[in-house]
Amino acid sequence: MNIGDKVRLIHSKEEGIVTRFLKNDVVEVEIEAGFKLPVLRKELAVVSKAEDKAFKPQSRVQETIAPQRPIGERSSSHVKADKGIYLAYLPINEKLVSLHIINNSDWDLPFSLTCGSEKTNRGLLGGFLMARTLQKYPIDLDLKDFDEWGNLTFQAFYYNFGYFTERPTFIKKMRLRANTFFSHKKLAPILLKDCYLFQLDAEDLPLVINPDELKEKMMQSKTEEIPLKTIEKPAATVDLHIEQLTTRALSMNNAQMLELQMRTFEAKFENAIASGMDEIVFIHGVGNGVLKQEIQKKLAGHKNVAWFQDAQKEKFGYGATRIKIK
Image (cartoon, rainbow, N blue to C red; front, side):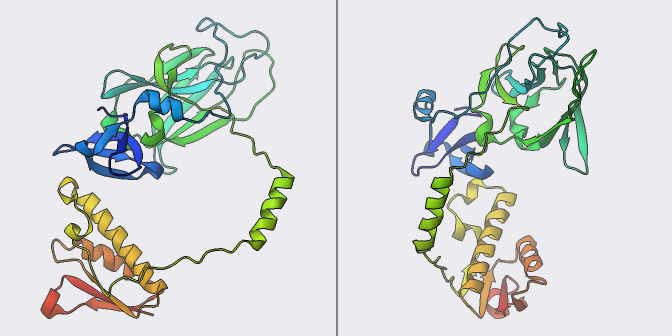
């Protein structure tokens, strides 16, 4: 089992991608929507590539790779290959990949590749990428730092020597996710090696609307009854100690424990409001005070909170919070 392998949880139907190996024979798996789970290795089964291929639905649009021509050769008086800008992550070993920007079009591209947010960006590559050439990022990337690669922004101008029709600046923003990254392995143009390949200028699928089908669905929606969502009323006292919430506490770090505790608190609190409860008590313990502080941050100024205070000090000390709901 390696980073990037597709795996299935033995005792459930969930599938995901291996992103990290943790201590005590625990594996971190990313499932849908980027959610990550720590799972014991013995509870995972690697999904066979043959199985994945056999059951994978056929894509509606095949990614096209522009016809090859000698690297660095200048284009003729008009552009023939209009698209073909790729990010290619070439595996070096089980841990490292190298990043390449490939221009497989007939355009010359003054470009920049950055990562970060709108306020703070870090430049990765930039310069002039001639038609049918590539550039390599000088530092190899470690797969264990996948989450730190950040949001990527690629910008480029289209340029050809001589006369051509002006095109707007090309901008593509993307964030790589482990649950889709490792399924993009294919032969990269120009580099001619199997890479995790992403075409930046690929066309989005067109939206096709069938008027008759849409009308039929609208008519159905008028007659179909919408089932009411049932709200589970929580207990009057909810214990947020980590051993009460999961059996995998030993494989979790402090950040993962806090995240699970806060998710539980928010879900139980919202259900308490929705089910009409007057008050609820959350037992968070004393510890280092981080969980209590995060809970009280959520409660401060909340429109449905009349007040909150330490609950039953003789029983819980300062390890519980009582909330009066409006």
